[in-house]
Structures are given as C-alpha cells and as structure tokens.
Image 1 (cartoon, rainbow, N blue to C red):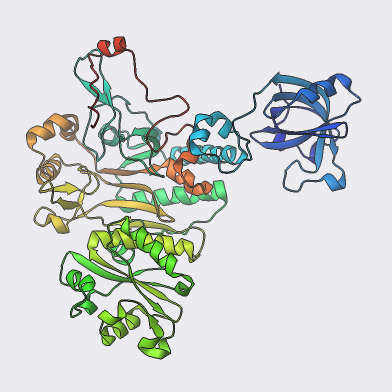
Image 2 (image 1 turned 60 degrees about the vertical axis):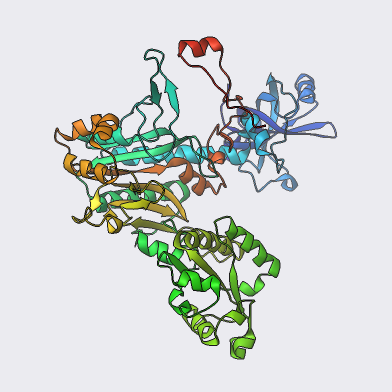
Length: 589
C-alpha cells in the first residue's frame, strides 16, 4: 500500500512518485490550497493538495485530524521560506496526485500535541496516546535495546529458553498473583515473580548459558518504577564467578548504550561495597553524578545536651550525619520548610540546619535556631569536618540509622536536582558485598537480604550471621538499580543450612522447594546470574519519568487498566467451574 515511510522522505527522492500511508497530524487550508501533515511512526511529511485536481481536492476538504489516508504524489522542493529545519522531510513536500481516505476518525479526546493530559485519560485512550511522536520514539528505542541485547547474548553463547507462566507459589518477597485450577479443585497456580528457580534448574540441566525476556508478576504497592507485570532480562550461566559475570554484563551495557544512544559508559564500571555506599550516601543505589555526601558527626555530639543530638549520639543503632550543600544560600526559609516536610515522609522528626554566611565572622557569621544549643567548639569542629565554605547550608540527620539513611538519602537527591548540582550525564556503578542476612525484630528471625538461594561469602557466615556478606551484586545507573543478581548456592547441604538459619524447617523446605532440593542431588554446577529490569533501563535511556511511559499498556498506580476496565467481575457460572465463591469485605460503618 505504500512505497515509503513519511519520516524517510527527503530531497534524495526529488521528482519521484511515491505512495504514503498514515494519519493526519494537522490540516491547514491556505487560500484554496490544502496542506496536510501526514504522520506515521517514522515521522511527518507535508502533503499539498491543489484545486486543479478537483476530485482529489474535494476529498482533501473532508479530511480532519487523525483520518487515515493513502496518498500518491510527486516530491518537490519547498519554497525557501517554507523550509522546516526541525523535520527530516523539512526541505521537501509531496504534491498529491491521488488520495484514498482509508478511514475517518471521530474527534480525539485530546490532541497529540496537547500538554498536561491526565494519565487516566491517556491510559483510557492508550492507542491514541501511543501515536504521539515521543511515545513512538520511546518504543522504537525499546525495540532497538531488546534486539541488540538478544544479539549480544546469542553472540556470547546464550540460549533463549522460555520458562512456565503457571507455577507454584514460592516466598520471593512480594504477594503472588494466584490462578485457580479448574482441574485441581481448591488448588492454585501462581504467576512467577521471577523465573529464579527455573533458571537454576536449567543450569542443573546443563544448558550452561540461558537468557529470557521474562514476564514477571508481583502483587505489591505501586510507584513510578513498579508495575504488577513487568519485563526483566533474565540471565544465568554456569562455571563463571561474580567477576566473570559482572565483566560480561557491563560489557553488554556499554555496547548497548553505544549502539542505541552513541554514549560511552565508563570502562570499567567502578565497584563499591554496600557498607561504603550506605555510609557515604545512605543508599545502596547512589547517584554518583551527585557530589553531595554524608559526613558522620556522631562523635562530635557525645557531650552535647541538645536532645535532638544527645539521644542518637548515645544510641549504637543511630547515626548523626551532616550534609554540606554548596549554593545553599539560594534556599529560602520556605524552601527549607518544604525540605523539612519532605524528610518527614521518611520518618524524620525534623531537619536541623546551619547557614554559613561568613566564616570570617565566627559564630556571628552563622545562621540557625540550633546554634544556641551547641557549644562553640562543637560548631567549629563541624565546620572543619565538613570543610564548610561561605554560601553553604549544612543539613543534619539524627535518628535511627535506617531513618537517617532513608530521609537524608532522599534529601541528597532532591537538593542535588533542585540546585542543579549533578555532574555529567551518566554514572555507572556496581554495588557489591551486600549483607547476607538481616534480623527481623517483628518475626524474631533472620531473613535473606536478596533471596534464600544467594551464596554466602566466606566460610564463617553461620557463626556470625549479622556480619555475613553475600556474593550478590547490583548494577546502578544514575541512581537507579537496573540489574541485580548473585552467585547461587549449588550445594544441597549449604542450601539446607541457609534454610535452617532463616527459620525454614526441613518440612517447609521440602513442601515449597522440593523440586530444587531434589535437583541439587544430581550434580549441580557452580552458577550465577542476574536480571535487568528492561522497563527501568528503557525509562532511563529515553529520559522518561515513569516506566509506564515505556510500557505499551501499563496499569495505573492502583493496578487497574482504564483501557480494558480490568480487573472486572466474572460471571457466577465461571466461578462455580473453578469452585470459587466471592466474599466481599463488610463495609465499615
């Protein structure tokens, strides 16, 4: 039906007759001559309808936005004053000789160039939203990324192998989506949170190098980078240690960025222990473009009587940090009040600060409501340790370590963005040496930081679980974890020891993981791997604000689909076939 895409027509086709198909992006009637900007996924081209061809012109008069057309015409140069340098086709136009209206269109609920369209509306009419040029470009980028990564992995000996969608519920950190079985009344399949166990079984099956663009499902609270269903690039390999895997995967990421965006990521990626990342940035996925760092000042507050600092100074589970912010004198009192509310979302009770106006004036050159509670020598020590300069603001976090890390880590990112402190466009990092376990006070037991199949580092992990490290690694780009994985446990004895430490009895382990434990008996190779979040990766590469902008048909933040009106009730007959009865919760009085 067409000879060319609209966005691929330029002056190299001058005087040629071509046929185009696409949507009417815009129609303009200029004194008896009709101009139509015809759009397809490749871009726009201007089509001119002259009145000398009466039948064609009459059809063009009926055309409105989003009509679907087929146009045959001749390429000619635009007048000099009509050139559009923003378009690939901006130097030419198509003089229409034939026009077929393939389909009419009702007035769309929003214009494609309209700003501030509500997300609910965009998702309800997603097929129109996806016509917008920026959305078309995002999905073209996504296709380039997936195509290149497939070729890279296959060139390195990986096999594309599918794993089941209907499987058994296993504890992997989030609620499962359950699927009732008609043929096994009262029993349920679970949609996979990840193919974790199956890819390990593939290593035991001798497949050696596996990959899959895997659909994953997690019933969890949503946010900008979460969806109930998402895609991960799932990778597993045998007879490689963590250094081998990380080197191969960062090579893949460098090659992908070069191929798709023509961007050179660092070679090699820096590596940072988890403990250092938390100490310096309060986050296990620090944005290394941001120059702000935590500075511990807990030791300086030991003799301070001010309760805000005195209590955490004497608590071994708390920390007190300072965050020196250059250009802080640009912040108004309202800005600081807003930041105080911001850190409150993360559990912080307040946000103490000192403004450094003039160091040469001593205490008189500082501005803060907390100065009257701090001895002069303590303030002097803080200024020296933070290497404060005129124009700085020093923010303080003082509380339980987790609250300080969460609140001040988030503040670090926000202030860095607000004051344009970020340096460079891309920063890559491996975070390694994660803790193997953490103690859950509510359940009074140890839990795995990643998952219970991650291998511990060293030999003394059982004697001191709180200090044990895992053979896990995360890839971080611009403060976003785009991929993570580990070396897996390949010894049945070690796997049982980990289960026991986590409070998983032999009976429970057999019930939930019998297929894995049985497979470990029959010659399991050393193996490991990782999974990249494809949606997050493409979100970063396209500069999008949410993974919903790089997923064709995403859900809302309440896990609903306005387009299909899902989830929805099903007929009673269908429920009876599945041996299910729906009991809704009673309404609150």
